[in-house]
Length: 619
Ligand code: AGP
Image (cartoon, rainbow, N blue to C red; front, side, top):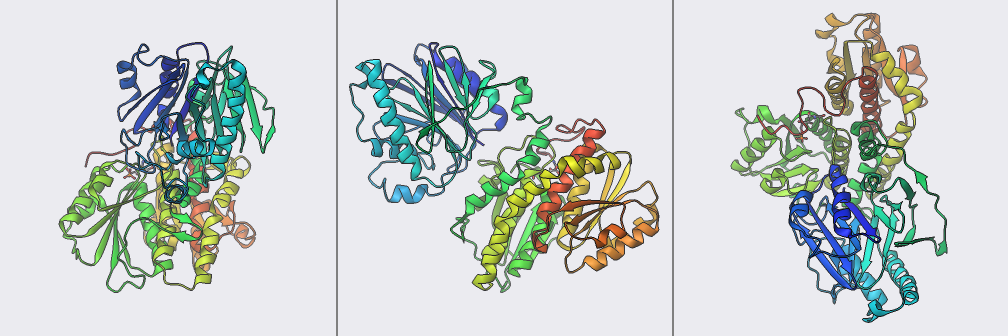
């Protein structure tokens, strides 16, 4: 996700802004920019280079000023480029905005209210400074010569103009606004976090605590709907038209702790971001019950000889396996899934005219997956990359790209990106489906419940998940079993556990264990069984009874209210009940937490497991 920072005080702003941006580099970015203003002159610099490059190439003499804003961009609308980097300004260059979030209705604003404006970028953000300027009209050109009192009067007018502009936006934002000749900054937030760092005759604004912790540990967390006027010696905060007082919090974290938002590991932070990843991914393609990928899919819902082939590796491969079940269940379009590393050297029969090949890759850089993508193109297939990283190799190779909007994933073990991949498959399945409108809307309503469902699983973390993790952490071998759409989730649960706890874990079709692996079942091989009450529940329960008969402990992932299961297993991790096809979401959140807390119990490295890399760019 993007990062925004601001400074207003008595020191030169440039070095402080650059230092703050450096502190939020961990959030991931593909471009950056700064604005410094002094006595009415606005200096802007944008780059696709790194923060270090800016530090080496910008001089305080050229970028002088005691008010500044900065931005690291994680591209969502418009590829990484200088013109798409923030800050964005209005036509007159009097108003500058840095933004973190997604404006859903930016196109209709550009086509309507701002149709007379000249836009320089492809971003959603750029509508904000234009809206503020349109709303406020022309600023008083002499404002910079006014007495301090005039600025106050300006401050209120500017704040009102910003509020009016924001009222037109749908979506999420944390913004900082700089105005030529104005001796302060305006900050506002809706769904995206924003904090104010309180200093001595200086104040700081940032997306996240790490950006300001070097300067001050006095933090004000802006709340939903807050808008603030921040000057060097005053902070005014308003919500719903009335002034509000927000308490200062004294932060005791180290900077490294702060980068993890107070979580001990990035992986745990990212598991807790899974509800937001669902929200942001849905927001990218779903508006007013309409699904639009901005990609022309020429696949008829009832197949007509058309089919989808997915190629992927690791966790993305398991997401694809789950996606197969989801799309075939919802859209009846045939989906084949191949390991990229196998597909690349197989004599796979590929008819380019009838197969759409989808490369599922969080990083967009996995060598095996990239090779498979290029092979598909050689066969004349239409290719789509489903990835988390704008500007990645996969996006430059595939004919089309669909972005999961999980935000930067720092932990080597994929978590929120897997959940976001599943969300894309639900949307794709519904997009391709030929079903009655009422059934479509019913599924859509269930999909919109998923952030809340994921939250409910996270709420169980302390009570049950950690207890079962302590139980599981004593073992060196484990099996994960499931059926149907949850077979892939069993495979993913096993991978997550083995990756970070170093327990040898295998995922298996529940019906397959008796065909050999039963030989390994002892009291020392616990089995984690996904027992969603779907149309094959009885079969899976039968498998569990067989497993129990061989003396292995069984931990069930089962729905709230299923009392039956208690009779046949040793432990139960409860998850909220959903439609069977949606059960992978709560089941995955539970298994991600189980893997994390088991590894924690075993005092493993977790964020950087031995021998692994976040992106495997070699075959
Ligand atoms: C997942 O936890 C692993 N880090 C690994 O299996 C990963 O999913 C795989 O390397 C594929 O990566 P990609 O999604 O970036 O292509």
